[in-house]
Length: 193
Length: 180
Length: 134
Image 1 (cartoon, helix red, strand yellow):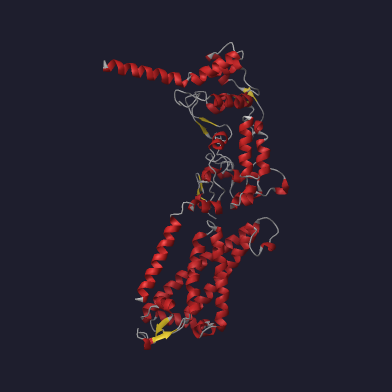
Image 2 (tube, chains in turn blue, green, purple):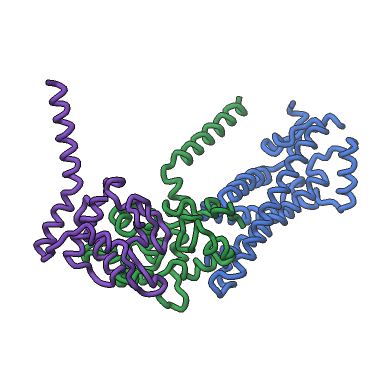
């Protein structure tokens, strides 16, 4: 795309955050307890990444801010309907559905990470929440493990939906959203404009 | 041009990384560190203590338990497992040197704990063991001809003899995989 | 000439094989004799093998056959752990009775468990004679 047509959308922090998160989640998901030390490290990294991104969501560049891509549920619903009818407008930043997915992913990841810390404390007597559990193992270790596992799987489900959404959006508007998240650039005008 | 070289770089790093990770001989040992106990090759121990049952890995019991057990071989769980004094001493030392207290493998760290500090000599009486197995119905163990007892680790833990107790490697005879 | 030397080689090998099998047994029988064993009776051995002895619960009656079967050519099973024990009969399992230390170790353990005491030299001699001929 020519220089005149390029629009800088995703700043470096957003991009590095995104792909590091992808890697960290993938690593955490496949290591499980087989490589517990790596799994825990990935978990800590994810929580750290989320903290940074949330802060950036308030003080960052234009398209990185929550105020730019978080819409009311009615708007999200309408957008989804419009997309299915192939008449949704193209957004430079995150579209309403994308914005909703980001929030959902963040919430799911935080719950997954936090319950992970709970399991770590209850079952392995390690990590920052160790003081919350006095008995050695027991009911809570198992309970939190179930919750942790559920949200890990739920996050994976969201990831699949997210990928489908990105591919769909790319097809509908004739642009490569994956490349955009790597280079940071989008075309000023897409096919649908 | 810049894009192509960037992609090439990423691919090369990726291939290198995957190759290093997969060709790592200690792959299984890394998993064991997280899901099992230390695997030690001791042919003498295996021969003297592995004839009637699996040669239980030293990392499965605390030192005090091994000490007590080795001092009572004449009445070893309703059998006589006496050994030559020299051999008994040699094996005791091996067990103490590699007991759960001395190992930082994940399962060993848990097996260090005994309820109210009462010295038990059965692995199956350690609190962590009981906790990990408390959801398994009796019909799958004592009522199961292929298993009979929780002492029969390798009946269900298919890699028990390799010191690996990974959940994925559990297969209960006559029942199937156990995955909660 | 070639055929005869071949035949002799076979006989020699056969003889040494049979002999090698019972070197440990021969030595032990000598030892037991020097310890006071006047008999080494195969029939006595057989009787001992199948005799039921009383013991502590949960194994109120015990015999050699409890783990090693009445027919020594069969695989046995540990009475508690149920682990399969390879046959005792040297004719089926040539590893049996080849190591003096092993033989003595198991006599000590198993006599004490089954009979409640160590076997006498005569008893060991008879048992050894019986087992080695299975």
